[in-house]
Image 1 (cartoon, rainbow, N blue to C red):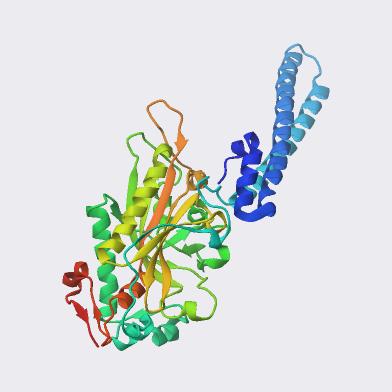
Image 2 (image 1 turned 90 degrees about the vertical axis):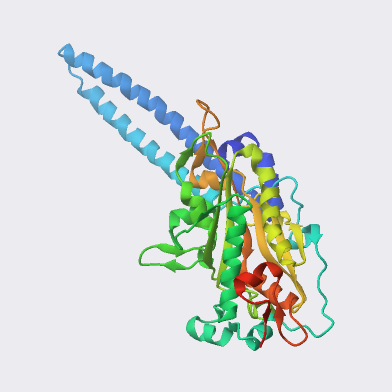
Length: 425
């Protein structure tokens, strides 16, 4: 959530930043918020003056009564003032709700380093490895998966509809091994604490991280209990410290968590939705950081490097993109996407988004810290990144390490855990 004080003090800056994200219509939110804020402050000023008048009248009524006089006229006036105050308080409450509604639906401001434009303006800032070009006709992962008995798309669709794949046998084991291996990597080498989190959360939790109210139609809701299936472990992990005041010694906090993820929107019909490319349910290992504001820029570089290390250890070619302002996620201030090369579909596939949110999520979730003893509390900075999302990681692994005979050779780091060096028909 944006800070109303920033809108008051530098409306042109906020207006220009929002214009970079969504054009003039989004930038117009600034004027709407400021108009409500002006009415709110005027009502508070008037109410304060009336409260002072009521207090003075109450003292006068007491003096009149002690002197044996008649104070009925002043008492009636005091009651009328009380009704005016109540009406002004209702007006303040209404403007508070209007401001909150606008700000809850307004995205974060992009970092000055973020390029302007849409997806076409995303910048490739570095790459690692050479994209594989097989000397034989490369198969897409859905054909490999079916031939090797790893993937069962028809039965997944029979059970739950399209976008809900079934992994079988060695396919299920390979995905479980990847999850376990990534969690071990992040806890033992990168210093994260592992969490096991709920997969159903309250509305407040989704508001805290920015999924609601903006993306309500893309989320799965258990209406009877008003609990929502998580779109990512970012939601429960970030809300772990909602409404908390952390001490000076608590930061940084670094958590990793595995979870299934549930998203209604899985792309339009066509080749981009085949196999595991776009699904409604998928597994992911998430990294979440709570940092001091002065550390958040460096923390984003560190977190991104930690996600990259997974791809490097697996020997998969990838590139890092800095997303442009029009392609940023709702809550993000800056995002690096990691895209891995998949030779079977001949595409770069996003397997991670690593983002810093500044204090945007912390304001929504009321997560503060005390910089030092006696200092005024401040909002923490939150960051998160996938490290990594499993479906497209599986796609890249199968398609990159496929052999001409339809088998798949596994990377060295996985062989002992999977129990074989090669997946064969």
